[in-house]
Image 1 (spheres, protein in one colour):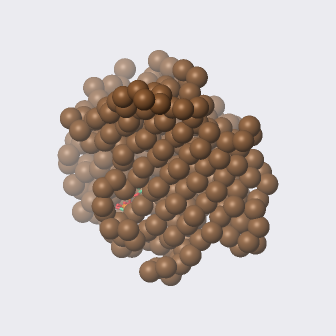
Image 2 (cartoon, helix red, strand yellow):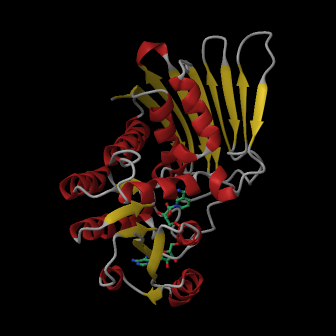
Length: 323
Ligand SMILES: NC(=O)c1ccc[n+]([C@@H]2O[C@H](COP(=O)([O-])OP(=O)(O)OC[C@H]3O[C@@H](n4cnc5c(N)ncnc54)[C@H](O)[C@@H]3O)[C@@H](O)[C@H]2O)c1
């Protein structure tokens, strides 16, 4: 049986997922909808699908699942409408542009009983899966440092409009709100600083997190750093053991004092596999086919957004937020 898929939004992410799905023999892409006719035509042609303009037109095709790869402010309506039509949904992150809207998405998913997978691709990226495997094997991260940069914020016209994205932390850093929860646990306190350097909205942040058991983490992020390598780096320090990632290409494991550190590199792996897009799409299709459960529940996306909201509250009030 093929999973009949429609793609809403034929921009960068629509093309990425379209390419992955097109290579999956379990999938048949029936339609691609984009307000930009040329983009819809191009991707539809590549996928052997119909080029359309709107979600409503997609929903008329008799689909099993929709990929929502349109911008953030469209996610709430597109996801809830598709679920109400009985479809499974893969939605690019974030869930929505506000916590209240994310709650509506989560509740709609729970009501529908359909598969909903959010684009937390790093959960499927080999370097972060290595970290998770070490944690599952007993490694306890006690001090975590995350640096995540964007080179510039001019590549998509809507990207620095907080009303349309929910803010830089919701658009970009949300990936590491999720990684922190996935690898360290639920934070208990957060204190954040944020500045609007170089752009009208805040794109520079320094955030500190406290967890139960004396564990701590920081995230430093900038939206105007140039694309110097690595854009993102995570260091996890445990009990005389450490792990450090360099973007999604290399991960270092230092197993103990005076022991050699081991580097694993993923340079030879394809880009969609390095970034976890391929693994995420495969997991979604497998869940839709009933071969495995949903990779993670919608509440994971909502909880990551509560951390985003807590950061903005801390910046507004100048106080730490107890979670
Ligand atoms: N997981 C990741 O690593 C990752 C990376 C980049 C972007 N994203 C997310 O993916 C989503 C899309 O980002 P992108 O970089 O592909 O953006 P993009 O601007 O390249 O593409 C978005 C496309 O959606 C179309 N569109 C806009 N409104 C529409 C509507 N109402 N109906 C149909 N089409 C519409 C636009 O014409 C455009 O072609 C965003 O939510 C973004 O946050 C995720």
